[in-house]
Length: 151
Image 1 (cartoon, rainbow, N blue to C red):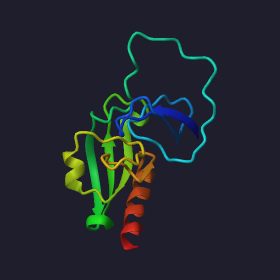
Image 2: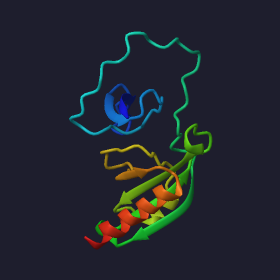
Image 3: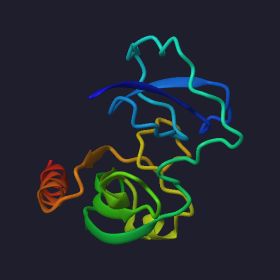
């Protein structure tokens, strides 16, 4: 796992660059700013060859379908593990296992945008954790929801 940079637009400032933790060179672009205080490595000295069209965001937070939701708790002490599929996403066949805090099942199902990247902006529905999209990862997400709900 390495550090990468991505553009942030949750705050409405498309020119702002934020830093976050991710797989090196995976090429994803997030619409949310990353955690503060992380120092990113210097960008490569060679710029990629210009293309005629910008690369689409991968995954596209506006193209998704909800598979399974496991929810526990009420209001602020509500946690939900969610299996989301992003059509056209190139890693893990577009499947993501996300955990949310304080977000209802109804709000998740009605969302028109669900970015799997972490975001500090209040307008974003942002996960508090992500797990590998496998049976093991889903089990960990459910266990996290159960444990956090008890606290």
